[in-house]
Amino acid sequence: MQTVMLYDGFCALCMQSLRMIKPLDWRGAIEYLNLQEWDTVHQRFPQLEYEQLMGAVHVVRPDGAVLAGYKGVRELLRQLPLTMWLYPILLLPGVSWLGDKVYNWIAAHRYQFNRIFGGPTECVDGTCKVHTRH
Image (cartoon, rainbow, N blue to C red; front, side, top):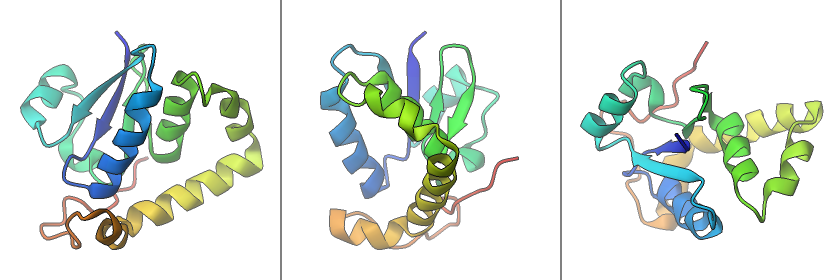
């Protein structure tokens, strides 16, 4: 099994991130699954719940560990040849603390960012809000 990136296909910011990541995935180390194709995602990962996955990128490692938000992005960067050198830096305590804060702020305001990228500008049904885990 390869690393799997779970993303919201309705989020323009998420789609822009995907467009930046895919060309850097020369080794094909990452599989990309759109949460909006829930039947496929749920069949592969029945332990995950749709509402928990919305609002932040989630990465499932080959060992089955699920990483959300900043930790997920950090794992994606570790998989990409051009960005893997950043991984040790992103593990540093102060960087991790700041990374979590910045990621959560961006995720909470993603519909304002969507204006830039041409996506929906409001969360109509509440499922796209940032959900806390743990």
